[in-house]
Amino acid sequence: MEAIDIQPWMFRVEPLQGESLSHFLGRFRRANELTPTGLGKMAGLGGAIARWEKFRFNPPPSLQQLEALGVVVRVERERLQEMLPPPGVGMKLEPIRLCGACYAQSPCHRIEWQFKEMQGCDRHGLMLLSECPNCGARFKVPALWVDGWCQRCFLGFAEIAKYQKAI
Ligand SMILES: [Zn+2]
Ligand SMILES: [Zn+2]
Image (cartoon, rainbow, N blue to C red; front, side):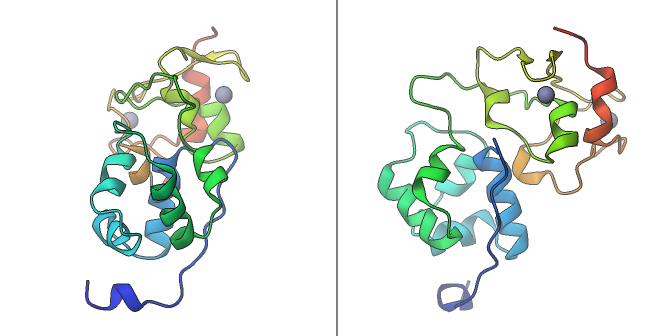
């Protein structure tokens, strides 16, 4: 906690197409060895980081909060907003869902998978999975997706598409 406020350098992490804020924050924190609390302190956001990583957007992140986060992670506020649900779109906090075919193309959790009305992936014509098809484990919050595989049976998320049913 002591040195964190004067840390002059931070690794920049490039956002991926469609990536959810939770997944992005997890990658940024690991690249810079920060806890949610540590990042929250740096950005002056208190406990908001931990809530956002769990898709708890009630109340929604304010423009000022996103500006403050943007300064620390060096990503424009508009780009951060793309990692959030658009206004009026309902979010499903649980279960965390996944399209393995998308993951194989771009290794990240996509924000659209947590939209309430989203049952399947339009891009691939596949139903989303809400648990590991091999062992039944729930997926962790995307901020904790370190290796891109099921934490219980190690099935790779990129290999999961073959278990997905067609829409
Ligand atoms: Zn897909
Ligand atoms: Zn599994």
